[in-house]
Length: 391
Image (tube, rainbow, N blue to C red):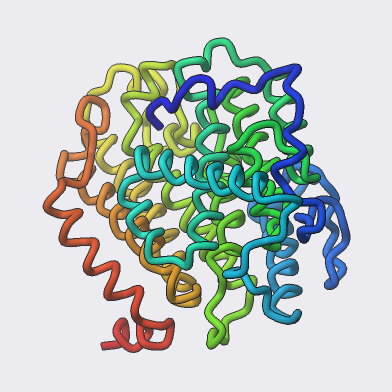
């Protein structure tokens, strides 16, 4: 990600919470609890059980998030169009301003996604903006211009801020927008904490032994975004899919997007001394770190990349199964993200797998063509899409 304003992204050690911005009588976001299905919701990262595969551990988080949404779908519908009650008009105006600022950040740094959010209901749109800004600020801690000054202690302070905002104690206006969001939607703290864990990994780890390790990293830094977003985007009332199915699709889209980022940025990451490709698979292909640093496209590299791209596409295919199950007003930005990101893989192939010195990107013309295609798919439900695939 490109840099956002520096004062936005640096956790302040002695900052005081802005208690007045988030009303006390709103529905409080969940953090540590047991869901109605009995799935354990202990507040720990997904690496709590290292003896099992990463997919098994991440699936436990998926089950927990799905349980919260199931719980809400079984309750009386929450009126998200109605403004939440506040202690005063001044507080309500400040909260509106906080959301507006989140929208401005989203519009500047994620233009296509922002355009899609404008089709959502105002309440859902604002909540998605708040989540986006928190994720961006978190990412910038280790991938922004101040990254060289970020320490594990700084991430601990960021983690504490997260706990505080989930308890209704935001530190600044951006925190206040997210604090209000998690008070109104069944958004759990675990994916947010896991994203911070991904930032910790980036501070101490620059190699991944196998795909199991890489999968967990991709979940931390990108799959978590899907789990954060589903409760806000909503599941279509007419959907017959299980909540777990929708969450799995959201997780798959995050994994697919991050794998695509990794394949696109091989050369850029190598210049920073980082290799996010599975070491075991590189060795099986007859490649090593030195080959990455040399940056020469060979037949071995092409064959290796074909396998990596094939895997990423499988995750995109898995993601497609759930997009049509989302609330109709939320589908377009998700379809746009899926279609545009998948085309980056096509661009890598078009560059003859040279992701060392050529950056794969989707041109403006292709983007313009993709947006109406995404919109058309967004108008279709899951059953209509299934019929289209069969034909």
